[in-house]
Image (cartoon, rainbow, N blue to C red; front, side, top):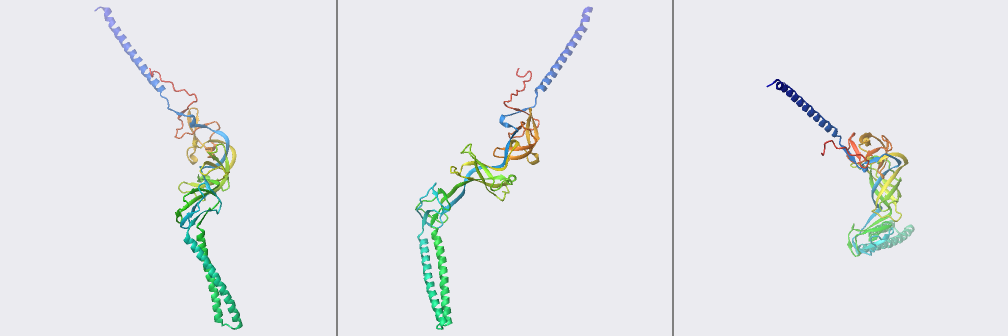
Length: 387
């Protein structure tokens, strides 16, 4: 081996060592780059909200009040029942027939009851004749007694006979009144003016006491009955004005009043019963679905948000505000409600134009959100992915 070959060995070893170190350095740099790329590609999750999930805080005129919804019902309903047993005769009215107060709608044939009434009237006539005779006898006895031609004992007997005749007449009249009242119940009369809403008996049908024959309703007024929370009941008073909207008459508003407010709240539901009364102009039919609004205060300008946006109870009431691409929890002070429109006034905590989340569910404060249709671009794909 010459000297030149001897010198080349250390040079080759040094070059190999440098190559190994360079490869290690390059490998280390590549790992750090991938870690950095992975860290850069890992972003916080974004909650996507639809346009209907957010609403803007707006200034509008708010009329404070309490809302009720439900079906309109006649304010007077009566079931006309048989008060004596017998056979129905002369029943000519049917569903939809107009009736007047006290009108005879049918009669119940009950010969025994009629005979008792006739016998009782005859008893009254006989008692009256007996009393008339006793009166004449008493007058004659008094004349004889005063003239000394009749003893006091006989005179007192004549007085007693007269008093007995009076008592007998009173008893006969009482019996006749009861029998006549019972006979009067054979006539089926309308309790008030209105319409027949249902007929459950037919002419010639045998009926018993208490059996329903007809149902009569008065639709001169219609009522919307419902319940309101206890904390709103103190705003409602009898006679307050109320507004109605009916699904059968879109675009029209009807006016009425508060008919009554229950004096006691439901202990379990914490609700108070309220009835709103609506005069019927003649075109409304019981059973129509209506929304009633009790006007408890005049209109005033206020910042409002949908009632669905308010979360929490009492002092913990708050809303979730969308600020940029983040969510913030904002405590609010609330004012009057307009349940007919589904909004509530905000006295403090929000400004006009801010957006609040109205969709159900909880989005934590600080979460990232994006509203569809606002032009937000999706995050770019990480380098190397999909290649």
